[in-house]
Structures are given as C-alpha cells and as structure tokens.
Image (cartoon, rainbow, N blue to C red; front, side, top):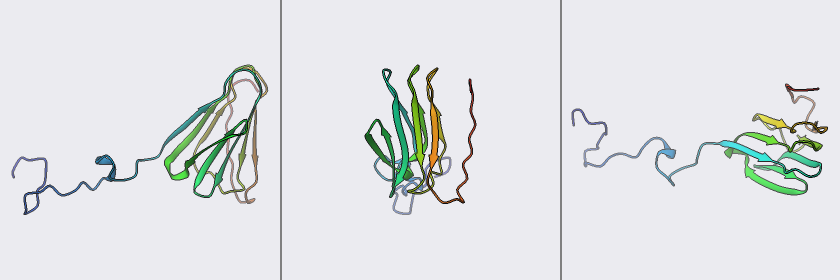
Amino acid sequence: TQGSDTTQSSQGVDPPSSNPAAVPGSGPSPPTAWNASTSAGSAHELSLRVNGANLELTIDGTVTSRPLDSVSSVSITGAADVNDTLTVDLDGGAIAIPIFFDGGAAGYDTLNVVGGPSADTVSSSATGDM
C-alpha cells in the first residue's frame, strides 16, 4: 500500500526482517563489552586467554568463560591500593578485541603478555603515574 512503512507479500503477510536481532529469540545477539573488577583487600592474579571458541578470564583461580564471538572488548578494573597482575596468554590464539586494564590507584600493577607465535603484534598505551 502507498505510504505504508511495511512491505507485504502477495499473501498479505509481512516478510521476515533481514536483521536477526530485530526479533527477540530469532538470532544471535551482537557482541558486547565484558567488564570485570576485583575487590579490595589483597593482591590479585588475573589471566585472559582463548580456549577453543571461548574467552576465559581467571581472577584469583576462579575461571569465567564466554563465547569469543559474543565479546566486543574486555575491560578489567583492579582495586585501589593492591597489587594486580594481568597475564594475557596468547598460547590458545590471538585475542583480536580491545583489552583495557586499569589496575586501580596506587599499588604495583603489572601487565604480562605471554605465548603466541612471534608474528603476533601487541600494542599498548599507558596513562597515569609510571
């Protein structure tokens, strides 16, 4: 019909949307940011790695996993006044999404990147007191 925002087939039924996320339950959701934080108290050991089709974040021995294709970025915020160490382990494969690590104010915070083929490229930028 003229002036209508919907298109109808010859049987009078609207065709399905070409966007699978437009209808709840009809397709995969777009990737989202994964945000994690540590609690105050004592130093924290964190690691991030690919394991098969999943991305695993370990905080003090507790592993949390998400499908890699569901994550658009990882943001980790440490507690203030404690030492936080994040190890990004590339032995399971490259992590081709942005990773943000803020160890928190004060403390001695460390970022380690290990594993992976020598052809991997790692770029970083730091802010605050060095």
